[in-house]
Amino acid sequence: MSRDEQLKTRWDSVVQILSNQFAEGDILDLDAIIYLIGVQELGQFKQAFKKDEKLNLMHIAICRLLEPYGFYEFDFVDKDGWPHYKIKEELPPLKAGEQSVLMKEAIVNYFLEKEVIE
Image (cartoon, rainbow, N blue to C red; front, side, top):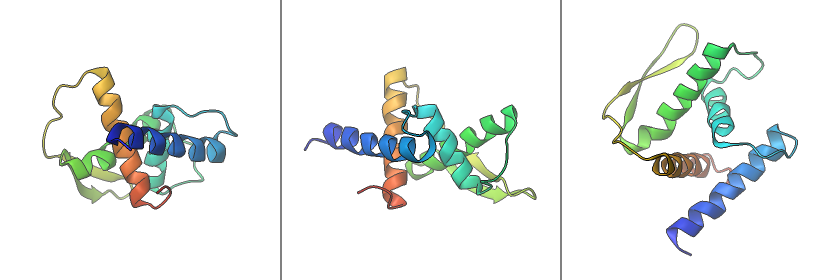
C-alpha cells in the first residue's frame, strides 16, 4: 500500500471512530477533530468553553500535533492547567491542500501514538 493510500485509510479510521464517539455518526471535519485533540490535551472534559477558549484549544492541539515535526516545543502548564508551547521553527509556506495533508498526517500519527488506530 502506498504512503498516500495508507494515510487515507488511517485518516478515514480516525474520522469514523471520532464521529461515532462524539457526533452520533455525523462526520467530523478537520477543525472539529483538532478541537477534540485540544480538549484531550487540556484534560478538562466536563467544562463548557467560551469562543476564545475554543480557539486556544485548537492552538494547543496544533502545537501538540506539530511538536514531533520540530515546529513547536512544550514549554509549561500555567496555573489553570493550560499547556503552553514555544515556536522552535516557523512553518514553511504551504498551500491549503499541503496544510491539510500535513495536519491529517499529524493527527493520524497522534492517534497511532495513543494506540487508537493501527
